[in-house]
Image (tube, rainbow, N blue to C red; front, top):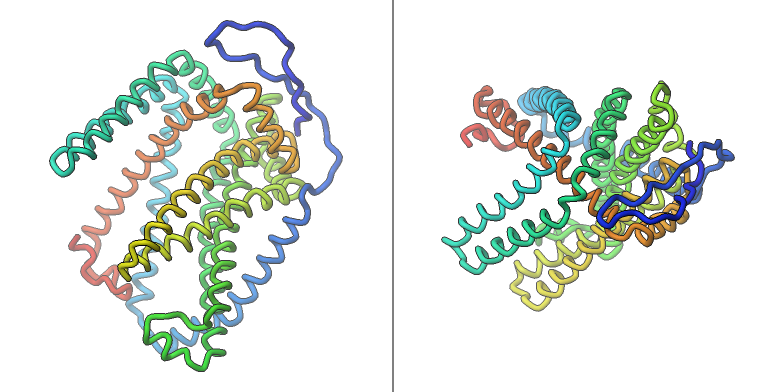
Length: 421
C-alpha cells in the first residue's frame, strides 16, 4: 500500500499544460480496520437479511411451489439461466476487445466519443422537430454546448488518453481483475436473490400478523400499515447498500491494483492484496460511503413512488412537489456518487479512512480546480461509449436468441408469446 501523497515541488508550468503530479512514497501502514462501526453495522444487517431469507422467505417459496407446481416454469428458468450465461460470456469477450482498442488508439476513441455525443444531439434535434420544435431547439443547444466543450478541452485530450492507456495496460497485466469483476456480477445476483427472499419473508410476517390483510390487499394496498411502510424504507436502504458495497469493493480493488502496478509492474499478487485490503482494513470505509448513497437512493425511490401514485390519483400539486423533490435528490445523489468515486480511489491507494479520503478529495479539487474533473470526464467518455457498444451488441444477440429460440422457452413466466416481439 502507498503512503500519504507528498505535495509536488512548487514551480511554474505553462498555461494549459497538465499540472505537476504529486509524488507518492511507499510505506507499510499499521494494520487497523478503518470506520469499523460501519463494517460491523453492515455485517449485522447481512445476518438479519439472511435470517429472514432462509427462514420465512424460503418457507413461503416452498409453500408457493407446492401449491403451484410447474415443470414448464422450471424448464424456462433453466433456459433463461443458460442464455444469460452465454450473454455474459459475449460481454466479457467484447469488453476485452474494447480494452485492446483503447490501448491502441485511446486518443482517437476519446475524440470519436465526444463527437458522437454531438451527432446524437443533432439526430435527436431533427427527430424532435417533427413532434415538438421547442424540444428540437433544446437538443440543438445541447449540441452547441458539446461543440464548445470539445474546443475547450482539446489540450487535455492527449493527457487523458495517456492516463487511459496506462490504466488499460495496468489492468491487462493483471488479468485476474477481469475474472474478479465477473465473479462480482454473480455476487450481485446472489445478493439480489437473497434480499428478495428476505423481503418476501418480512412481508409474510406482517401479513400473518394483520387480521385485516385480505381486505387491504383487495383494495390494492399492502398489509402491515405504517409499521410496514417504515420497514420498506429500511429494506430499500438494505438492497441499495449491499449493491453499493459490492460495487465499491471492486472500485477500491482496481485502484489499489493500478497503484501497485505503477510502482512495481512485476508484482504478481497485486489483485489479491488489494482485494484483501478492501475486505478488511478498508471495508468499514467502503460501507460508510456506500450507506450515504444507499439512503439517498432509497429516499428517491420512495419519492418516485409517491409521484406516480399522485399522478394516478390526479393530484397535480403533490405530483409536482414529488417531482421537484426527486430531481433534487437525483442531483445530490449524483454529486455524492462522483465525490465517493474519488474518495474510494484514495481509500484503495493510500488506505485512508472515509473522512480522511474526503478531505484529500477536497484538497485535490482545491489545488487542481477543474483539471481533475475534465481528465476524468474525457476518460469516462471513451469508457462509456465502450459500455454502450458492448450493451447494444449483447442486447442484439439476446434479441436474436429470443426471436429464434423455441416458442415455449418463456412458458411459466406469463409471456408465452414473448418471442413474437
